[in-house]
Length: 335
Image 1 (cartoon, rainbow, N blue to C red):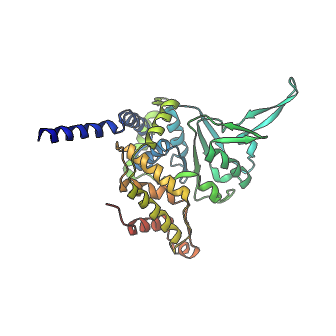
Image 2: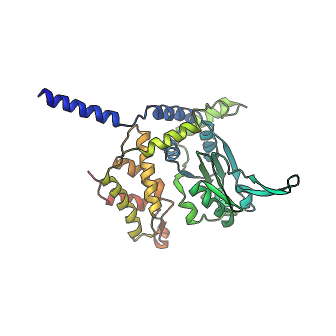
Image 3: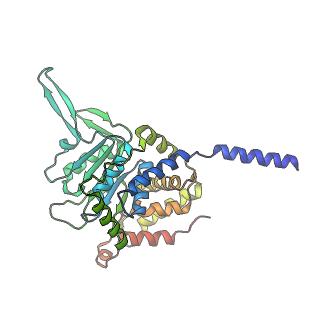
């Protein structure tokens, strides 16, 4: 009996040692949430999704009507991290060189030198991304997917971390362009910001009144550095995902391709995005393993901008979110 107890204790000790230590990550996340909540009222789900995206090293598309703090949210997240920040306002006349950079002739050396554009930073806020034409959107394809830029035959690797947060207004159509599917597919999450509730709007007014002429972002503390972010992102990749959960993800994504209400399903990139985001949600909850709930929580923000509803169903008012929810409910949860 003593030998059995010793073996059990030894196994438990081995299992304990093999677990990931998420204590530092949890402390940083808690501190970042506290800083974000000093300005943002409510929107707990959105804040969780933002933090998961940065843990998963994924780009974010923020969608909402004007005035719901899309830009402030992105700037606020940048304030909590000791990293480079760059803001690019997209307009119809914006050229790819305005983003990536351009070769400039140096009269002293009689040679062309590459002058880096604003994309060469760590966290990039692209305001109103749907205001730039396809030519400018295409300039983001390589940089968002491969974290590098190729100009005049030379490849420039961007510094880590590299995260794009783009905003767009779903209502206004004048002077806007539809984002290409290839561009949308490069965003890990599409996060929709809703109007605040009554009690939340009252708190917003109270805070704004108490600020007087002070800047609401001036007292935000920097919580983590670029090196710590990289460490956390590496840690999140090591979170355990069982085989049956990988099959669960694959079934959800394949069902989007076979659904009669959708004429464009999700690609394998979406499957990988759900996997990475589910690991991020697990880390956010302090777990070193993924559960079906993590996958379900990741599925909607990952898939809603990657699938397209058939015109007939769209005219009936059926949204991609409703169809994705039906798909998730139809796929059997692994036990």
